[in-house]
Image 1 (tube, one colour):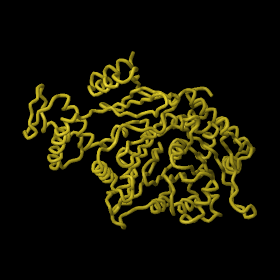
Image 2 (spheres, rainbow, N blue to C red; image 1 turned 135 degrees about the vertical axis):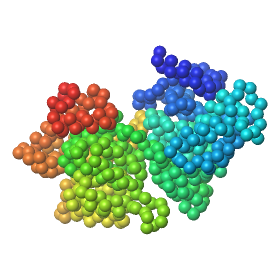
Image 3 (cartoon, rainbow, N blue to C red; image 1 turned 60 degrees about the horizontal axis):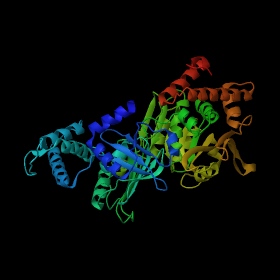
Image 4 (cartoon, one colour; image 1 turned 90 degrees about the vertical axis):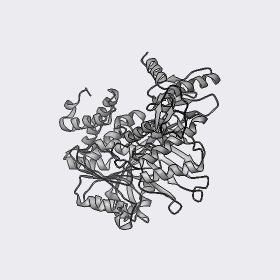
Amino acid sequence: MKMENEFEEALKNNKHLSDYLLNFQKEHTSLPSFITSLPREMSLEKTPNIIYPVGDPVFIHIYGEPHKDIEYLVIEPQLREEEKELYATVFDRVLEKGVRVKSKDDLRGTVLKLIDETVRVEAFVKRSLASLIIKVTKEEYDKLRYLVIRDIFDSGPVEPMLRDPYLEDIHCVGLNQISLVHKIFANIRTNVRFDSKMSLDNWLRTMSERIGRPIGDANPIAGGTLPSGSRIAIAYSDDISRRGSSFTIRKFTKTPLSITQLIKFGTMSAEEAAYLWLCLENGMSVFLCGETASGKTAAMNATLIFIDSKAKIYSAEDATEVTPPHDVWQQLATKEEGAEESQVHMFTLLKAALRSRPNYIIVGEIRGIEGAVAFQAMQTGHPVMSTFHASSVKKMIQRFIGAPISVPVTFIDNLNVCVVLHAYYRNGILIRRILAIEELEGYYEEAGGVVTRAVFQLNPADDKHEFRGLNNSYILEEKIAARQGYKDKRKIYDELFKRAKVLNAMVEHEIFDFTETFKMVQAYREYGLEGLPFPV
């Protein structure tokens, strides 16, 4: 009943939504269901027909028919042909008046005031676009307010997709339809496209200026973080992107996925999470490796709750994605635009980190020579967390000891643990899994290289994470148990299994909020099982 009331309210307040449904009903027998949240189980639905809101007045319609691809249909106010000239006139006048605006404190409010200075709502309209005040209907006024704000203040045609919390990736090549990676429905095409090469290029120039890295024929490649926190990569002009200017936006949620959500999704097991809990609590250096979009950053953010809440965290990134919940967190980002002498690269940030005496250094992603500084930090006793593009521990080591990073192979064992992640399709559903957690025991000349131990391994046949390091973990026994003063080093496994039970209990009690999981970990650290609000 509540959902029906919400749908009725949405139809009442958004004429374009009711118009859309009337047109849809003319060609289809069933109406869409209105929902406000999408469960992951919906990914099994081959012919979905649902509408969900992403912030008034925008709605998303996911529609599939048998033997056809699922469609992602954006429902937002649309201009009729006769309204396009009206919109262009109002848009230009708002921009002209906006030149006199000096303050950016309330840009949205300023633009709305400028619209109200340009148009007046009347029931019966006989207008002239040359008039000082242009007469419009209430419906036209609502469209103008949304579209002018969307195109000046927000992100133009891409705005509905940036609002959608269920998207991971937005991709556009030239004037083709924009395509997406949806968290529930995987790869999917939209009904949105840029109507001309000029409009696409203009939009890309605007986005590049927002990230502080203007593009042009002289510098056609740019990338950075949008004000929303999403990362954009731009390839501008036909000379570089031969099928037309293109872009990819990788979306990041402001609130990270929690460790309990990753356990529930099957990305990792509770035992793997408990192992990482012990490692991070005890100052081990951990790298998360995998291919693009394998879930490295999400997994790293989720596990940051295991670092002591009183620790001093120092993060260095190109695009700000790391979100530790700690009170003492120094967040720094590179600066690559401007004169060469004013630029600040990752290498410089990491050298600065070593002077700040942090308890943990977090590098958003290691790509080049800054990797050597990260290993120097580990050598001097600073634990480091980072993500790295490599599909296995062996390939990670090969990249680190090769140019341009060039870490001496004898230094590699300063890194304690490598977590390898992978994204793949299983029964038509995109899933992310930890393939392995491997310990780097040390460099042995007689072994001809670095000796590693796989303490966890994914069994793909049954999609289970197997604990192969039981009574055979170098890090747990020789590093952590020794540091904690265990007389019987193998008692450390009892603590691991106890923490796994705590994590499973959190899943059972549906404690999925990122901040709440941090509080539970803090409570266990200070008071043990007695500090938890549920029995284990």
